Structures are given as C-alpha cells and as structure tokens.
Length: 567
Ligand code: FES
Image (cartoon, rainbow, N blue to C red):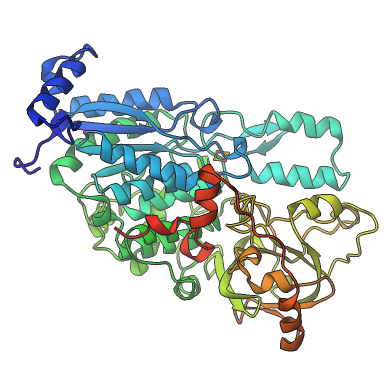
C-alpha cells in the first residue's frame, strides 16, 4: 500500500475545517471503544454485514463475523464491522429486487464514507451478493466477498427436501389435489431447516458461484454449507485475505473485468444457474462501464455444456455439489473456454489456481466431465423477435423440450392482480396448448419485477394432470423454479414494449432453435392497438419508490439505476 496516502483510521477525515483536529478527535473517540492504541493504529478492514432478524438465511452471521475478525486480527489488521441493509428474499414486499439498488448504494456509500483500507462483504440471500458486488465495484476500495453458504437438506417421510425447488413441487402437487392439507403443513417445517441460503442452484447459490468465478471470493468457498466448520475456516481465511488484498492494492474493477464477467457467464451456463443472475451480471457490468450482450450470451450458451446435476435442473443439492468438488471441479472442466489470465482477490491468475487444483477429487454423479455433460449446451438462452425486440430469457435446462418449437393461443393476464383473480376460475378459457401471458410485471411496474413469471398452471388444468405450459412475461422467475417460462421480455409492457399489445386469442410462436419469439399479429392491427389508451404508468409521489420508478433501467441493463452506471 502507498505510504503517501493516509491509511487506517486516518483515511477520509470528518470535515471540521482542521484536519489535524479531525484526526485527534477521531482517535480520542475510537479509544472509547476500549481498543488499544496499537490496534487502532493498524490498517482497517471494514466488514459489511447484512445480518437481520428479517433474514433467516443469515442467522449464522454473528459466528461467521467472529471468524472473519479472527482472520483480520491474525494478519495484522483492525476489523471493524458495519451494518448495511439486508434483503431477506421472502420477507420483502413487493420483491427484493426493488431494494437491491438501495442496498448497493448503502454498501457503496458506507465503504466510501468510512475509513477502511479494504472491506469484507458478508452476503448470501439472493440479492445481497449482487448488491454488495455492485456497491464494491463503484466504491473502488479493495473488497473480498464472503457468502453465507447453502442450507442443509431435511427429510420428509423418507424423502430428501431442500428449499426451494421442493417447496414449489409440493405446492404444485397440493394445488393439483395430489397432496393433502395435512401433508403440506408437515412439509412446511421441513423445507428450510438450517441457517444458510436455499439448498439448490437457485439465485443465492448461483451468485455465490459467480462471485467465485468473478474472482471476488476465495477459491473453493462458494458451496461450503452454512453450518459446516469449513465455512468458519473460509471466513477466517477471508479476513486474512482482506489484509493481503489491501497490501496488494487490488481494486474490485481489476478483478471484475469484462473477461471475468465472461467467465462468470460461462459458469452460469455450466451450472444451470438462475435466470436472475443475467440481470445481476448485467448490473455489475454496467458499474464497470461495460455490458452483457444477450447475443453474446447465446454464443456462449451454444458452446458451454451443462456440467452440474443439481436441482432445479437436475437431481442433487448444494451440499452434494460441495462434497463433489464444487466450483474448482467446474472451472477445471471449463478451462479451455475460460479467460485464464483473470486475477482474483488472492492476486493469483485463474490459470495458476487451476494448475494447483488439478488433482482434486470429483464426484462425477454431480459434476460431469465436459466430454460427457448433463447437456451439450448451456442452461440459458435469449430469444428475440417481434414480441421481445431487446430480448427475453428462457432457462432451457429447466424447461420441457417438447414445447421448444411451438405456437399457441395467448391467454392474457393484464397484471398480477388479474392473474390472482382469474387463474383458478373454472370458467377461464384455457387449454393445455395455450400460452399464458402476464403483462405489467416488469422493472418499472409497481411490483418491481417480481418472481411471478412462473405462472401457476390454471387450477382446472393442474387437476387434470398438466404440469407445464409456455408462460411469457416481463417478470422474473425464482432460480429454484422449473418450467417452460419465457422471462424478462424487454422492453416491458409498462415501458411500451410489444408485450403491452398482446390480447387473448392472439397467436404467439417460439422457436428455441432459431432464438425467436414472435407475436403473430399483422402490423396494421398492432398500429391500431397502439392508438388505444394504455394503462396508467406507476408514478409514486415520494421517497425511494419515486427514485426507483424514475431511474430504473430495463432488464437487459440489469435493472440498475441509470445514475449508478459507469464510474
Ligand atoms: Fe434466502 Fe432463498 S430465501 S436464499
């Protein structure tokens, strides 16, 4: 670290017009914490904690925090934790994505405003990790990510259960009258039974893997279960790494480069990861002045095999992924496709990491070799066409292939409220070959792009055994869901996208092989529909909701705020 710049508590002094007095005052107040002058003179590692009573996934963070502090102290730094907003996925209304940018601003500003030479980012639940990576990219202080790790699975009547693919599976069976009210209540207490993030390759696990692929977490730490002793050792090692990182002076933008983002996209495809990660990677890319091209995503998808056999696309759970070899095994299989000169927070290039890990064990039932993959092409694909000029996303690894080349009659729901009112009505005019369409659930809608794209199968069809249908929306989908679900239609309906013009009875065609999604309505009719008054745009009067509505970008730009992009 440069000796010409102030370090530790001398950084970023409070402005009283007399810097010497500001430092004197800060030191005197710091002494009131009871820490020794020797400790207070050390370089400072801030620890951004996102612990909260409203975040069950982070309930082990106090213990993890102790371990991080231990590592920082042992390496010669002073650990000082600070709280930020937490985003407990299932406790936020209307949806956690709406608050990701708020958390990223909190993280960025508190890193910048407080005197720290490096920062450890402690996150886990879905949107917390991208929020921290976005904030750290903008703040510019050396940063290392520590994720909370996944939950363990539990048992129900001899069957293994894990949040939250099994939550959705059981709920679908309950809706179809295949599971009783008594049993669904039993299952409720067996889905999420330990600290940690969802037990499958949902958004949290995907982002944990991508943080490691980006080089922002220590090698081998993404998949360690939350309650495993290795997780505490990873936390201690992360604290030590933060001290080394400040000495090396490696800023997040030197780690999260365009090449590293491309590596992360490869990994996303190979692990059959969450569609939400496309949005988060696009937002991170925007913070470093680049973009995630959905056309490029398709090129990568066609040349990246799915290697990981995990729910929701496959069979296993995150604890199995860790035992099977975790991210190291995935990266080694992908080696010929990766940018190997990318440097991680350890200061080591990816090539050197993989050289050192060549001989590690791999369980091939969970992590397949590249020459014998789970699927020969990537898990996600972008569709373009008259219905989605700027793209839409399909998780083909979690979808029914028999629907990939199909045409259907649209059954349209104008909003989430309309969906809730009509989806289970027996007089809903719908048959199994129809395409369900949900509008006004995109980024600028009142609900802030909820995970509502996994529209339920209409009650009467579910009861007759229908398990999947084509579903199209400008919403998102939980990373733990399964189905032929076309998401993130861009531009969204509320921003004047063609989705707004679709009416029940229209024909829609999708072709996954041609990467197309088209509304089969002639242009004169569409022009006529454009003249009709549209629905009122959501324009809140004040506060964060107003800031959000005025500045949120579309899904292909990561739903970040326009004024947060770039440097
Ligand atoms: Fe926190 Fe799934 S609810 S990771």
